[in-house]
Amino acid sequence: MLAHYVPQRFDCADLVRLFNDTFLGAYNTRLVSGGDEPLYSPADGLQPATIVFAHDYFSSGLHEIAHWLIAGEHRRLQQDYGYWYCPDGRDALQQAAFEQVEIAPQALEWILTKACGRAFRLSLDNLTGDVGDVRPFAEAVYRRVLMYVKQGLSVRADAMRQALVGFYSTHLELKAHDFTIEEIYRP
Image 1 (cartoon, rainbow, N blue to C red):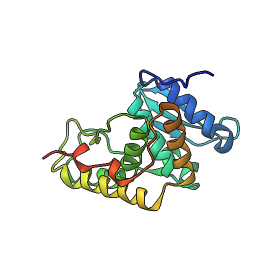
Image 2 (image 1 turned 30 degrees about the vertical axis):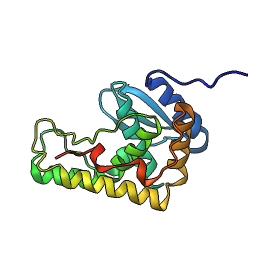
Image 3 (image 1 turned 90 degrees about the vertical axis):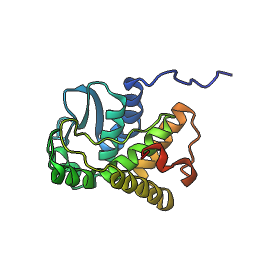
Image 4 (image 1 turned 90 degrees about the horizontal axis):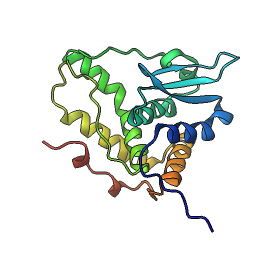
């Protein structure tokens, strides 16, 4: 009997393969690593929809996957799901707007990150701007995780979680006690 392969590091090629094995056939969507910036492009009739994540960063891959898993069918027909993006250097009001649209994807990213056996880091994505008080954002992401735990994940999100759990042998069952606010926010 062959032993189950447990990866010793987090390789973006593994993440790409897991996503593509799970979704390319069923949803005509592929994951690609190494872009300068994240980008989602819908299928065009010749090419499948493409999720590009930045610079071969594993956490960027998980984050972009989370956005795709949340996007409904109509959003998946639009470049970058039809959302605006204000780059690094946001003022307090722009940062607050950014955080509102990032609650659900970061909560799902946290779940996917845990499914890999990795520690999750909340992303404010505003290195040169005004991030303000991080606590409300961290609490909102935590509450959304608890909502996902209580209500369950979508079929696509759970398929990705299960693929990660199986590959990384983490056995994460998606229970509330698996997540604490202290993991992402310490005053």
